[in-house]
Amino acid sequence: MRVLVTGGAGFVGSHLVDAHVARGDEVVVVDDLSTGRLQNIEAHVSEGRVRFLEGKAEDPAVIEPAFDGVELVYHLAAAVGVFQILAHPLASIRTNLDASSAVFERASARGIRTLFTSTSEVYGKNVSDALNEDDDTIYGSTRVHRWLYAVSKATDEFLALAHHQELGLPVTVVRLFNTTGPRQTGAYGMVVPRFVRQAIEGKPLTVYGDGGQLRCFTNVHDVVAALMALTAAPAAIGAVVNVGNPREISIRDLAALVCEIVGSNSPVELVDYESAYGKGFEDMRRRVPDVSRLRRLIGFVPTTPLEDTIKEIARGIAPGR
Image (cartoon, rainbow, N blue to C red; front, side):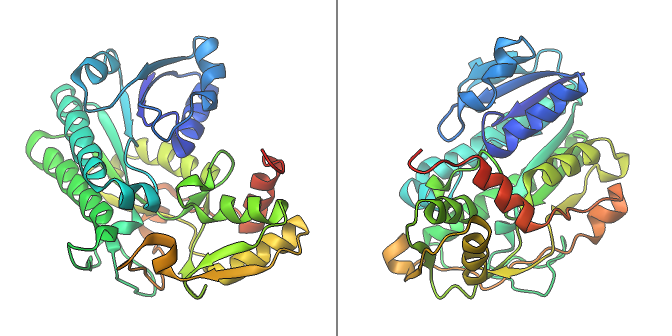
């Protein structure tokens, strides 16, 4: 089939492109390369397996031709990374809302199966033992830019589900929990590749806050497998689904694990939130997914050990590169 991936030159998107190319599909990628990298998909482009359209998904001149002959849509294009969002709040809101509107409108008009990648950020300050898709979302003040990403992605979810209800869009909303693996960069605040690079280069591992925050990290290959399986599951249409590995680890323990795996003696350096992100930053102490719905829908949940993922990231990092 012909598949459209918005944000397909990015971290998760490019792995998704790899998987569809390997399956024998034709792939169309739309990406403005603001955070994605052409080198992630250039081999497929040069081989003629991927058609690359550089530009924003909300630009009619880009998105209209992208839909030509498409049978499946993955909408991943979005503002990426805490630092980017805090530095460019207006652009982040516009990117998230405008791109989603453009994609959902065109997919609805054509009745194309669509998967939208949302985020665990939509749960906000909710620190339940295992976050269920129907749990409440809890946000802070609108004066704290930390929450604009969560609110804009939640609005995207409302858009997707409204298109499903009123226009029959066959869409699935997927809330991705922390996803990591090869090709992810620490430049936008992603903690695992940042720790791995710091450890390999013998630099202090900078832990924001006290390091007691609990997170769950999912291997990108598990995520891609789940996304593809969900698009083939009729029962997933109209559903909101968590995708994540439920294994918890504190950020402080993550730093120690990275050092152990790469054989580094780097120290851990605690950095307060204000120094890292600016005044008024708020964070969550815990974020753990309930993946029972995912298991029911596709019979699969992410289980790749974090240790294996760290080793995979480390193999792709050379000191000073």
